[in-house]
Length: 199
Ligand SMILES: [Zn+2]
Image (cartoon, rainbow, N blue to C red; front, side, top):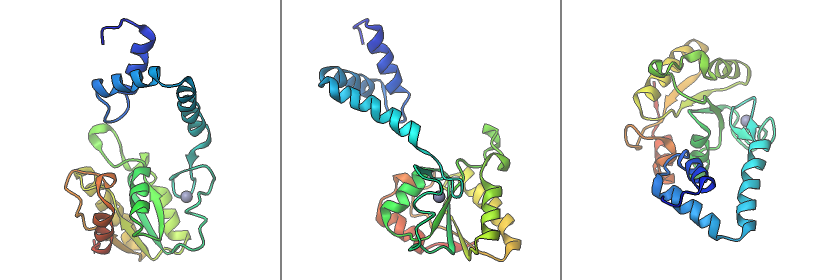
């Protein structure tokens, strides 16, 4: 953009750091906010700060929440014997949106990726093992993404769970290889859950 307005450039740069936002979109967002009523911009700023301040990780499942434990962990209507392991909170959002899962979750916050310097100890795998031992879990569904790292992480966890006598399943990926749960539609996700296999 050739406006030479440092404050606007800064805003555009901030938008560009968001996932999936290119230069053009960032410029559109910035120009839109400058043209919109001031309250809209204030509301956006407030919403960002408020969410950052209120949201934390549930110490039990690792999902993002405003309470600890989170609403899902404390929901007595859910099946507390089934645990679905996902990489990131986006996976929980996708599965909840599909409506096809009524158990509990465990968010790893990443996958094992030696090239990125991420090992098992950097994830919430030890917490997962503790939960399986202490919470009367009968089945663990490994719903890490269909990427090399996601598959390796699922395999690693399945080996750790083997001696615990719990049923370990992997979701059937109708999801294209190399892609994440959050990009699949609800029907695909529900089928992937129904078609999970023992590993
Ligand atoms: Zn929770």
